[in-house]
Amino acid sequence: MDHTDHVNLLRPASLDKGGSWADLGAGSGAFTFALRELIGPTATIYAVDKDRSSLETLKSEYRARFETAENLHLQVQDFSRPSSLPSLDGILAANSLHYFKDRVKVLQHIKSFLKPNGKLIVIEYNVDSGNPWVPYPFSFVSFGKLALQAGFSEPQLLARHPSQFLREFYSAMTFKTES
Image 1 (tube, helix red, strand yellow):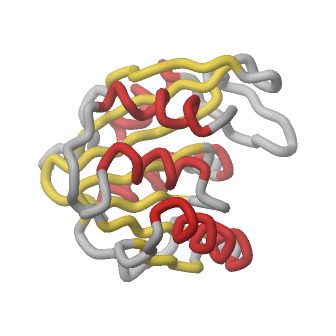
Image 2 (cartoon, rainbow, N blue to C red):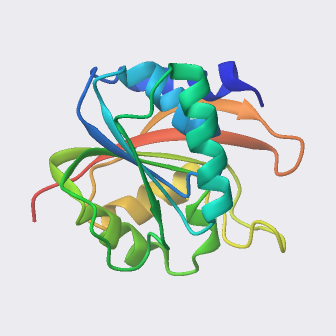
């Protein structure tokens, strides 16, 4: 996939400009760049990943693409653990949730970072069985069940994109519900 594919997986969400977002499991920033393109230069983005080197690459490339990294904040950490993230308008989890066996628990934790009615966008392989590199993927149908169990709204399928490894990717959006 390239940058255009990343943007196209997010574009159907019709994201508002600005706000505060986190990219959980940001890596070197493929989806961070797509998110930034859609939410604009005034938005604040928290790029969260355990790999400091990947985040430093992200920051360097972000600065080169957008001429500043003023509204980009790096957090070197495991996003499934307690965090100092502020209350967020939205969270992007692109290919990062399939590393956790107890996804409901992780989704509930992620939900705690969102403002009321905050958005969660997930990009995942559209399969329910994985491999050593993608141990716990979940199809869009399974995500629907997981999201409801974790206190989110019924997810909306945004887009699909072919994958040479595990059939296809999908993007979906759900909202934090009050409970």
